[in-house]
Length: 311
Image (tube, rainbow, N blue to C red; front, side):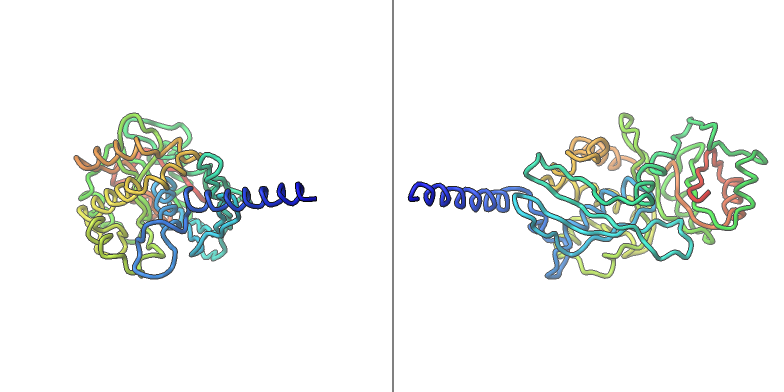
């Protein structure tokens, strides 16, 4: 009986010790460095939103304020996702993130519904770099795609330019075609990186929350919708988002082990940042509006490829 009691005590101590170790030495989403000037734990959700919005055009993800500790290094956070082609549809897809530090910093998605899964697999890589043409998405006056777009009342489209545009040209375009909603910019990147990366122009849910003083100073225009959109603020915001991820290495180590790791990892961030510091150009935009208004832009701005998200 005494031996059984000793064994039981050892097991209990081992379990408690393991929980303590994984909670205090592993990645804990609730212990991120403060980004916002309030008492809520919004930091993990904001970092996750940052990396997702840079890779998935028009994706708006909203996480709960806190991750729930599930034991043994596991944390759970609920989120919902808005996707912008759903005209007038306020419903959103739901997803649960499992942060599992004890399994080599892996992050997995569970409870993916069909709509949400399509967001990740159907639109993210449809931009064409200058010089590339797609038989499916190539658009020119009076071809089948052109005529289909022209007669569409409401369109969510990814537009690729024949030549890269400067950020000044993009801002001028946004003013010229103010009847269209510009929601994402596909920005130039290093040659060995073939996945679209860019900047979201959608109003952030964080825009009305005060940033911590050091964040305002170290990451100018981090939340672009907080100020006037100019070529300079677009570049600053893009660099600030990259720098923010660079400065959160524990988060990036955890993310790099997930499927995101194929696209953005620490080494890629450094290359992207250095490249953008020298020059930032845009090779595509995501816009929402009537097909007639989008065709006007196609005719005037040398659009070579167009991908319709609502078909």
